[in-house]
Image 1 (tube, protein in one colour):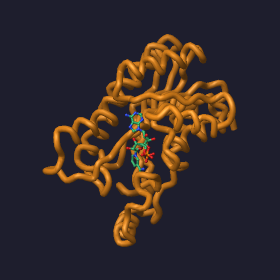
Image 2: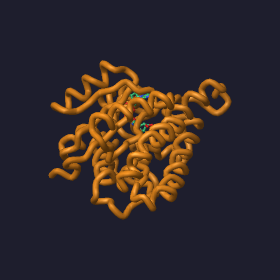
Image 3: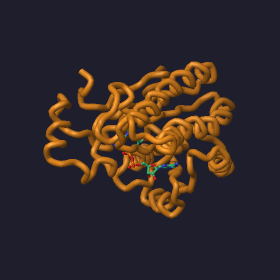
Length: 249
Ligand code: NAD
C-alpha cells in the first residue's frame, strides 16, 4: 500500500525474534519505508535488518547511552539526510513485587523504558524540527494504566506511565513544528517476553480478562504503529492508543 513510501524510520529494540519491534519494522518496510533497526547487539540488529530486504540498516545502540543514541542518529542522518519516524520500542520487564525491587532493579527498568525514550527522542528531534515533520511513537503498556501484570512489576508500570507523561509533554512542545508524538499501550501480546513463561492456569486467567478472548499478535501492535507513523494519523498527537482486545472495558 506504500503508506510509508520514501520515509526513513528508526525502530529501537527491533532485533528480538518474535518482538513487537521486529514486526513493526517488517510492516514499515512492506509499506515502503527504509528502516534502521537499533538494538544492543550489532550482529543481531544487522541480521534483522537484512531480513527486511535490501537497503535497511542494523546498528548497535544502547538506548540508555545518550552519546550512543546521538552517534547512531548522526550516522543515519549522514546516510539518509532525514528521519521521518522514530519508534521507541526497546524495553525490559522484571517480574518483581514492590518490596523486592532494589535500587539497581529500579534504575535498570526506568533507564531502558523511560530514559531511553527521552535520549532517542532528543537525538532525532532537531532533524524532525528542521524538516517540519516527523512522527515519534512510544511503546507504553496496559501496565501503566491499571498497574502491574504478571511480567512487568511496579517499577515497569511506573516507567511506562512515565512514557505516557513524556509523550504528552513532547507532543505539546513539538506540535508547532509538525512533529507528532503518540503512545501505544499494548495489552497481553504473545512475544518472547511471554513465550513459555505461562502455566495453562495463568494463561486461562489472563484470557478471562480479555473480552476478545485471545492474546494479541505482534502484528496487531505493528498495525497501530503504522497508523501513528503514517499520514493517516496526521491530526493525532499526544494520544495513547490501546491495543488490548478490550482489556480495559
Ligand atoms: P522483546 O523483549 O521481545 O524485545 C525488546 C528488545 O529491546 C530486545 O530486542 C532487546 O534486545 C532490546 N533492548 C533491551 N534493552 C535495550 C537497550 N538498552 N537498548 C536497545 N535495545 C534494548 O519485547 P517486546 O515484547 O517486543 O516488547 C516491545 C515493547 O513493547 C517494550 O517496550 C515492551 O515493554 C512493550 N510492551 C510489550 C508487551 C507484550 O505483551 N509483549 C505489552 C505491553 C508493552
